[in-house]
Image (cartoon, rainbow, N blue to C red):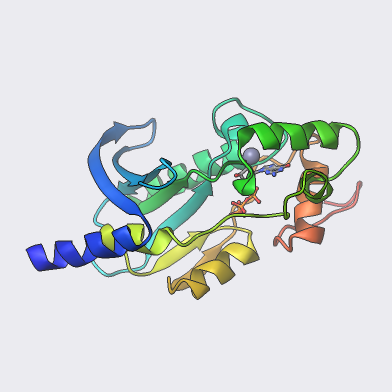
Amino acid sequence: MHEHADTKSASLREKNLEYVTSCDLPMPWATFQLHAFLDTVTGKEHLALTLGDVANGEPVLARLHSECLTGDALFSQRCDCGAQLEGALKNIAAEGRGVLLYLRQEGRGIGLINKIRAYRLQDAGADTVEANHKLGFDADLRDYGQCKPILNYLGITELRLMTNNPRKMDALQQHGVPVTERLPLLLNRNPFNEHYLRTKASKLGHWIAVHTPGHK
Ligand SMILES: Nc1nc2c(ncn2[C@@H]2O[C@H](COP(=O)(O)OP(=O)(O)OP(=O)(O)O)[C@@H](O)[C@H]2O)c(=O)[nH]1
Ligand SMILES: [Zn+2]
């Protein structure tokens, strides 16, 4: 038992992660367990929310959510993040079992301040990818390497993943996290984020139907 826990801690340590503690987190839809992990190099605090018995070997309904302070906490309509966060938690609560990793890679890895700089460039006409390039960054700097050891620590082996992002699917495969099913998560399409979602589809390959005005 202890040996097993030690192996799990060792694979966390390989990614400079440490499990810290857990608590109950009552939400409007269910009471989740909140687990805190610390990246000892960057100081980033990654979170996992679990519901039900996720360690019984069955594939787990999952969302890997990248931090978006503006969308998740400030109700921004520039993106679909807040609605996806809420929708994923509701779906997990409806099944009574699942996991959401809240990964602190704000702004696709460029950080909050740079994301706001990117938004300003977008206000002046750039798209989400061009804005990153103008600031000297690649389109997407995220790293999903921390997911496997965190999931492993929680006893989760296979995912049924809620995402529209093919890069996320590829990254998980590269990191050896089996995904048995992909479930689309298309929420909060609105006039403010239509262009952003179209760019994600055309330049980043997201599986989002691009419809022209007048066609649903
Ligand atoms: N650099 C940058 N980051 C953004 C922008 N809009 C949203 N983000 C960040 O993008 C991340 C969310 O990525 P998305 O591509 O929307 O979604 P995803 O998680 O990759 O894919 P899904 O699983 O389908 O939702 C969050 O970290 C946001 O902060 C933007 O215009 N520029
Ligand atoms: Zn967002």
